[in-house]
Length: 575
Image (cartoon, rainbow, N blue to C red):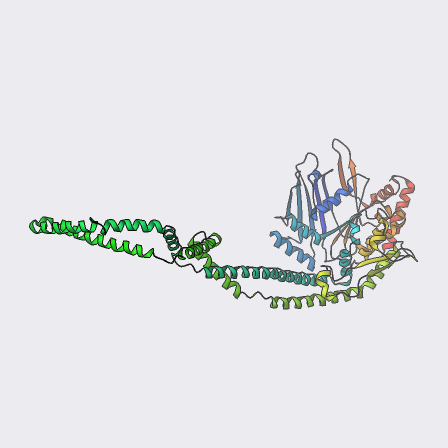
């Protein structure tokens, strides 16, 4: 096994569809799950999928129960992967691993809501998905098709070549360079906006400076306009006032002068009238001052006839500016101050991305170098990888099948940020030629279900030493193979199980004959229908193999055939 004893130790299931309660004590090596169709074999795979963090629906909860629960107890070894798993659990939720045992729990209620516990502590479903990817891999007939995807083929080749770390470096460098390029692009967009803003601010500042509105000028202009618009009426009123004050036979000034002299003489006799005499003297001086101001007002009315037009033009300028930058004179002045400050800041800003562009060139060069290094390593390992897969396929009955890996020999350095993916600078494609004389074709275009199942097994066998996931779960991927190749498939699975804990749900007796541990799932019909899971003792294995082959576990000929299958399996795996 990889990473010491890292494996699933115990699987406990409660209220999952037809399974009311089941407890499986797992072990290293190859474990087979069999049973009649509809008996509930797939529910074990469902339970493992729940532990891997896959989606769950409330309909999985057993009728009459409020929730289902799946507990997986994983025994960790002393290797680096076990240490990484323990660190992840502690970081994700503060969970702990006691005595090298990690308890993973998934609870789903009827509403489809999920609760997760890792190492006894609540955790998120996202954390469970990440941890699940570190603990187990599940392949069904549909999941096997994943090998047809180019990115999965890249990962598979890297697992063989030992270049997964280099691929990670490339992906990280690529992501960093793309982010920097996006930042420069955003800055360029910002620079265009900055220039547009500068142009607007300069225009606005120029207009406000040219307006040069003085403090209180608007009020003065409006007052002057009021006077200039009513000159004739002003002249008439001022003339009438001055006439009453100092022109004519009985002016106000003359009458006041007479009254002031008379009061002054009276005050010389009666001192109590001195105050009145002083007041009349003051009034006389005040009237004289009013007359002077009225005369001055008359003088101001004798202005340039073009002054009214000039005032109106200036008022139009000011009112237009107030509509755009006001509405008050105070607002206009504040706008001028803000414009001047922002203009100064934008003109001083250094928006030239020269330093960033230089950094982008360096980072792109780094991506190119890593990409070329990764491509060279993949091409170097590609031939050996294809040959190893081909050898395994020959053992699985595809004796004339040829395999090769197709990938570009180079890539355009100036387009690497556009064309590359996180999986590498160029795509990888597994090509096969099933029969001699036929053209090479991509695996995704040629493989039937049975052929693809064997390719998956061949790849798993080839990657036995490199593959990192400790638990490999296979859900009837041999369904399209048939009994004729069952022994070869079983042998390959047994070989893979030397490096993985392998669990396979199968209907083929020749495959099941290679099992080191055999679980039987059957449906029990009583007051409530339920699926039961139990591990078969050695003496019952041959009976189950006979039932798998013929449907009758008590048939003598079938039992003899089952016995021969077991003996054959032992011979094939001896040593």
